[in-house]
Length: 241
Ligand code: NDP
Image (tube, rainbow, N blue to C red):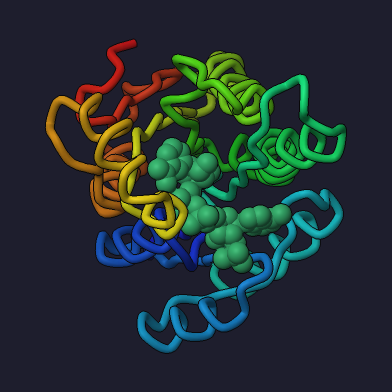
């Protein structure tokens, strides 16, 4: 029987590419979305992928909606923590809401989702947890102290949980994408993209969401059982950790 994979923020951007790639690799996929109902319904119609609404900031909602997914599709063996936001500002201008929202949606969410599923994975003796971090969690980025703290926190979480889970057949890995051509990045002014970002990417282009999705499919596979606690950089050579 196909394993079930759950992708947060799974109907848009990188998450949509991950959901589709996992489906094509033979997984039963549940894609969670938050606010963009139109994008989610279009995605469902286009792909036939199971879609459900979830605010990853809400622990109780993770518990109830994941229980429903497991009733509908079977035990969740693969968790992709992809949902994320940015609220950029220099720290001396950052308000508390921007700090808290960014930490909550990028990092606390990883506790909410993973805590909900980890006991079942341990009981079944199998699991794949894949955390979508960021190049900026590795190298830091001016104007993103909140985002960098959250994304670096995901990497620490990954290493600790990998150690806790290895003996139970569960791997825990992070992927640190560089600049990927999603709506977020495409919305940047062209001169910023051309003059301040692309010159720093040795391969000379943005990454495609599908290139991150291929990393996820690899780490999600049964055959990737010897890889755990790692951070896979997919950034066109922009930063070599
Ligand atoms: P998008 O902004 O395109 O998509 C973000 C996704 O997160 C959406 O699906 C959104 O749901 C979901 N989301 C936001 N807030 C919540 C919430 N509270 N609860 C549940 N879901 C939520 O981002 P990208 O595709 O560009 O990025 C995906 C991940 O990759 C993020 O974690 C990001 O930090 C990381 N990343 C992205 C890079 C890039 O260059 N694009 C580079 C490095 C890392 P909805 O569709 O309903 O709005």
